[in-house]
Length: 266
Image (cartoon, rainbow, N blue to C red; front, side, top):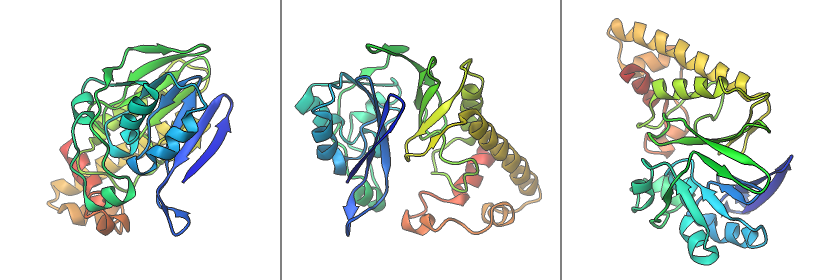
């Protein structure tokens, strides 16, 4: 399933596996002036390629190595001959078969290993100049793609919501906060966030600032409770409440307990 939306010169391409005529879970890629940011899941790779055949795509850049961001890499290389970039820390992970839980296999699918190139600091298209900004936290080599003059920030999975209630086990809350504040400080007139789930946030600075403040407040509360000897689950129950319904569906891969663990590690 594919859905196309537009904001200014940006084309948003929302992709999802279809089940019973409905989208299972949207993932968004973005096309600007021949540059594609992320390539979506494997399950929708053919749909994406069919759409892009008429779009004169010259480059792809992956914000990180996860399967819902690199799933069409291989097909794009084989069928359209497009050059793909990623942060050097992500390249080995893009060029191997990932270990996926059952829910990941169902929702997104296994991406084929792909050889990609180290991302430059800047990518220039015919009309725009994109800066590559290192934003670790969700993964160690996560990046954001910034068009400074327009104030467009393609933030991958760095930002989902102002008040996240769950993390995956590998996420680093301290690095996420630093990366968010780094984007807030960028010297651009405005900052529009284009997220990997399809949400477009017009006041990106406010959203990032709110999320970073929220995570720091959560961190203070969690660490105070940990000093009193409370368990991760007890801390979560006090400061977040009931765990997300996605926790059992993802075998605990996406949970509020993971958020608390990340905070306590930092």
